[in-house]
Image (cartoon, rainbow, N blue to C red; front, side):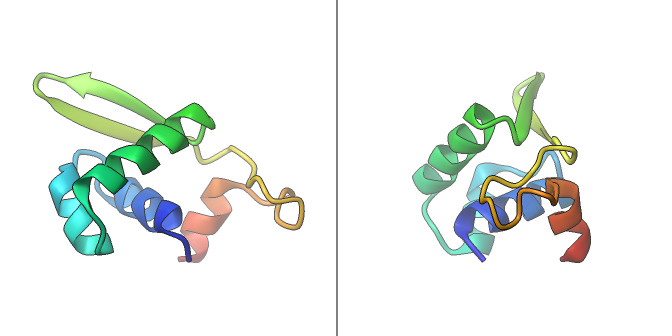
Length: 82
């Protein structure tokens, strides 16, 4: 799986996880996690909400996967599979 998928799965399990912990669990830098989250937000797969000083993330499980081969499946399907 891609790092994007790993980050999305972690955020779906724990919406208020801190980026440092995501980076450690995925095995990438915190800056890479920030870029991935920005990508996921831009592409409509993720919504960020600021709660106090912390971010909370909501995966948009109804979004279709991007690749034409998997376009008939949703993000929710992928997360459920894992």
